[in-house]
Image (cartoon, rainbow, N blue to C red; front, side, top):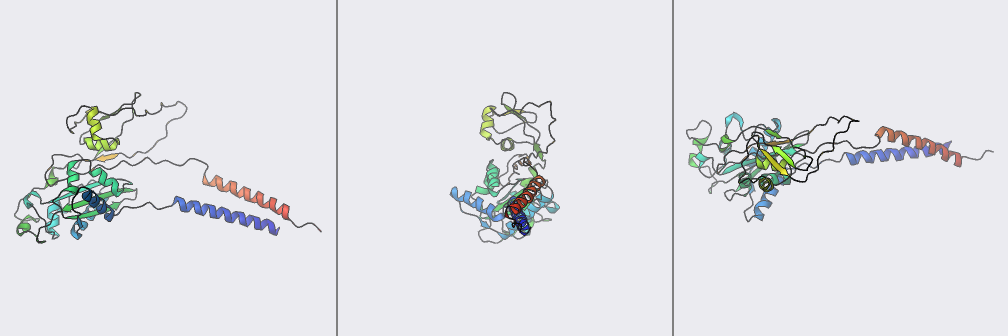
Length: 339
């Protein structure tokens, strides 16, 4: 009897160790991107293009993180807008940043943002290279400083913001800077005023039976946003549709790709299970001003799926039965002979 209980306890210990290890592996934490990673990615891109690395400036860091937090709180709807209707230029001047350039045109500063499920800092940089205004924020020679902000939602959506700017040679604010503060006498153009705050989902279309994929353009969608949603290139969509430029129009039907796999035909034996899908979010770019940038397109979230196989309760039950049977068998073999 003693040996029977020893075998049973050993089996239970092995089971507990296995389940504990299983839980540890499945609960491995996801890496969360940081502002420093975002800055490193931008500077790596600048150095690769023969430009100087940008210095992390505390005011720009504060502004970028504040905007990332605002985007998280509004699920991206805030765009480039600031509290009390301030512009980015006014916010920088108010905090004491010595902004260079023509302040009536906003000065030498610009901002990029992008958000998407599970995005990395590298994903953000790739998305921003999809058009000239975003690329200019990172690669303009008229920049000396950078700030970055990252906010992560409970659903895994990551919001990235970078602000780049050029400070004055003296490191002091320009004499006329006070005129462009909120309530000042100076009249400044806000490049972001032209930016639409519409958030237009891109519903990815499935392939037709011949493998062709067509997308019907909705108001506010852009060619580069569509290209990112379908994981293809702007040049490829332009080639397939004989487009001379990147301009697209509402209700325009675009051929996105050839040779895609069409979905399987529905079966009569089982109704399709209801699923949730997360689509790309696109902010439409209007005309480009020298110091403005446009909101970027987030990368679509991958569909979630549940692992197949026997349930945990069934596995535990089977193992418990094996332990009891094995323990009893072992005890029968090693029991003390009857006297």
